[in-house]
Every structure is written in C-alpha cells, then in structure tokens.
Length: 329
Image 1 (cartoon, one colour):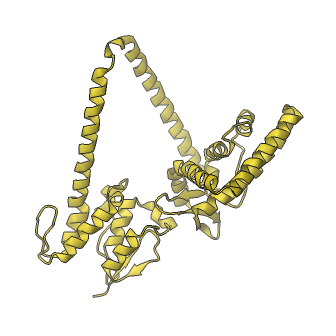
Image 2 (cartoon, rainbow, N blue to C red):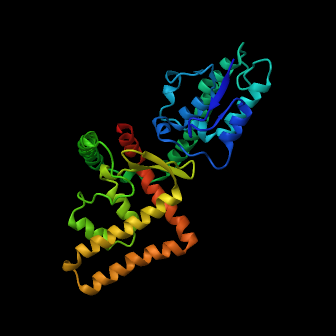
C-alpha cells in the first residue's frame, strides 16, 4: 500500500515517513502558505497534513474537520500535540495515552486523538483559564463602587447598543455589496486606488505623525486595494501579482519594503495635490518629513524590524476580507 504525507500549508513538501513530517511541521521557520491553504483554518490544515494519502486517497475528509473552521487550538499547542501522536505511534497496544481508550487500528487512534480527545483537553484547559479570569474580574467588580451606577445610565447604554447594532448591520451590508462587485484586486506592483479617500482625510494622512501606518490602514478600507494576505505563523505572505500569475509568495520583509516605497510615493503625490491649500513652507516641510521617514527606515535596522511588525499588523487586520477576495479569483 502506497502511503504519503503532503504538507497542506505549502503543498510542496511530501514524505512517506511520519517522523519526517513531524520535523517539517515543528521547525522554527514555518513553511510559507500557498493561496489554497487560506481556505482552511490552521487546525484544519494541520489535520489535512497529518493524515496520509493511502493509494492516493486521503484518509480524512473535509466533513470530519469542518468543526475546526475557525480553530487554532491544535496549532497553538503544536509540540504537545505532536508528542501525543508520537506516544500513540510507539504504543503498540493502540491505547490512547490521554484517556486509555483502546483501538484496533492506528488510523482510528490518530483520529480519536486529533478529532476529539486532545482537542477536548485543550478546550477544557481554555475553559478553566476563562473561569479563573472571570473569577478575578468578579472580585474586581465587587470592590468597585457599583452604587454609583444609575438606572438611567443603563437605559442609555441599551439604546446606544441598539443604535450601534443597527449601524453595524448597515455597514456589513454595504461592505458585502462592495465585495460582491469586486472581481480582482489591484496588482501589488501598481499604485493603490485612492478614489474613496476624501480631501479632509488626505490632510489627516499627510499631516499625521504616523502617516505611513495610517495611510496603509486607510487605503485597505477600499477592497480594490486588498492584494496582500499575511501569514503571521511564518515569515511570508501572498500578494496578488496579475491575471496570469494571480497570487505569488513573498517574504514579509520584502512585502513591507515595497509597501513603504509605494506609501512614500503616494504620500508625496497627495502632498503635492494639497500644496495650493497650505503655506509653501508647510508643504515643503511635509515633503521633507515624508521622505525622511522613508530614508530613516532604509538605514536603521531596528526601525525596519519595528515597521515590519507594525505594517504586518495592519495587513493582518484586513486579512479576512483579503481572503474572501482571493477566493473570488
């Protein structure tokens, strides 16, 4: 019987030995995710990887892991998880080391550990943590001046909650409509679409001390500009290249380097656009500040590390919408 394991994160690593697969999964520098992998959660990818293909047929189905669609519990406890699988593999009696249940087949034991036993253990552990945190919070609340709260204030909170809920629903509907109209994002090498940024916002961005991160966050509110998907568990991400190449893998540092240069160029364009509305000296000063921030970034290694983290977080904030758009292509 032909058996092989395929890493579903990168879809390029293959092996017939489980021990080699474990090494690949547990290495410090994680393999880069390919575009298809973003259809699954980290836990789903992990299980799709851990279960082998037997005579080219996968020994686990997507229906079996559907309940993990938003889960990272297994992946966040990867080393402990793998160690339990290794213990199970070495245990010739096919006995679960977590609950002592016995199985006739190794595949059944692996499914038991991965799909229920270890997962449930992690969930119970998390519940206990939440319970302890809640108890601590309750102690803090008891010690606070609760008597100062009034019924009128609580009523106002309820009304604002209702209004906020309505606003959120309206916003969601608007965003969904925009998403449905989009066929593909702007290629990463092209300039971003600034058509949704009004003049007042342009002033805010150009004269903002955090102009680079604020600019990126603002332009990513336009779904046309969602051409980057960051994977925080590795040092890479994917960017939309063009119609032919679609998405390609890039190092996060390279993504941020190109992002910084693009932000610099488009901030300078905006500053020039606004020059008639401000004093010439002010316009000149802002042009120099935009350029200085970029030059400081290119020369200072510590600053580069901080900027990579900062802009990666901004991209990651918009990750889910970017994934939705990638699935449309």
